[in-house]
Length: 432
Ligand code: UD1
Image (cartoon, rainbow, N blue to C red; front, side, top):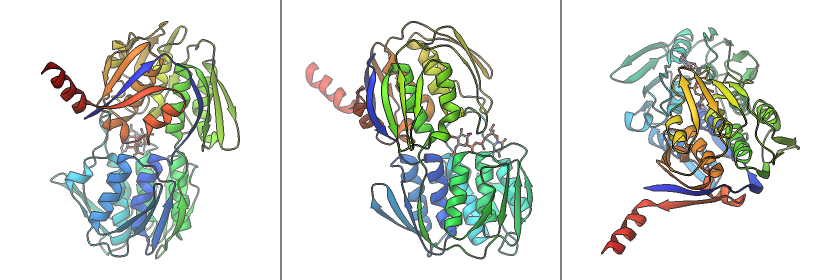
């Protein structure tokens, strides 16, 4: 067991480099199942969700070679199975991409219902409806999704998303890319990782147009070949470091980013009195004066991302005045509130709304991470709080942040990764 120990209240300075996007990687890696050749994928983040999805591919019979820390080669020509067992699938939400990828490749998939962070009800009805629209027979039995294309291959169709779902849009693309005929996805989600998945598939020989708009057209192709592709930088990881500087103060260059993807976050930070300068593939974030209050409503891209809501809330705890957050995507995204209160934050929650009354200071306390982004927000709050904050259950945070401790140390944060067993045995030794 490990935890983070943070001595807060120190401004951050220097530069930090952002890794490849988690939510793109966990879709692009399963997408390699669709190719009849070796896919070389670069800028892959070293996080536990990626380790897990690569393990699932290996279990299915794919050859996975780690070329270096951030490059992986996947050869899916000798896949043995279209069945993903429960013990692997339930550990992550993105395992649902295996349904679309296996269905697109083999016309068959048996995948255990996905797991992932507890953000409230996380249905996959839109995913299943998309597969059905493409001609698949779909049922859920014994906790597994069974999907079969009756004649071995799906056929193109019109798909209308009742709600702009990121996962369902990407899954529909995966299933449709090798289908017979053309598929049109309307009211598609527009997140940067949707464009990234489309670019990856097109590099491998797919014919996808319109990704990044709300209508995506996929002309089915017989086969995909191998190739080389580099994943985009992680918008949310970059946003998390922006929020860390906003909360703790300081002056930091955030490198390897696409500044346009950060507009929805930087606009809010600027409203809060934070200075953000854009460079080609970097942003510089400076916060010296006090933080000002603001209101936030989370929405699909290009709106303010729900995956940045807890981190911005950490900043707003220290802003002048009262801020209101309206969580528009997930029903259970305020589980960090009880932990923030331990630091002295003033927050009231009523359903989707959180009202944050800014305080002059937070003071360190032991906290427990409860999901990935809530955990990141606790780190930010800990960096801004006076005194020592300890954060346990950090496995949630490691699902999505590469080398968080080293990267924060690199910009002057006093944060350490501590083995709790070592501490326990030290205490036992002292007691003996
Ligand atoms: C992805 C991200 C997650 C992020 C979310 C919204 C991954 C692995 N995860 O999750 O970090 O918070 O986008 O940006 O990329 N919905 C349905 N039926 C469905 C699917 C979704 O009703 O079949 C609803 C959900 O309950 C939610 C909304 O649609 O209210 C958006 O969900 P969706 O965009 O699908 O999120 P995920 O793809 O699961």
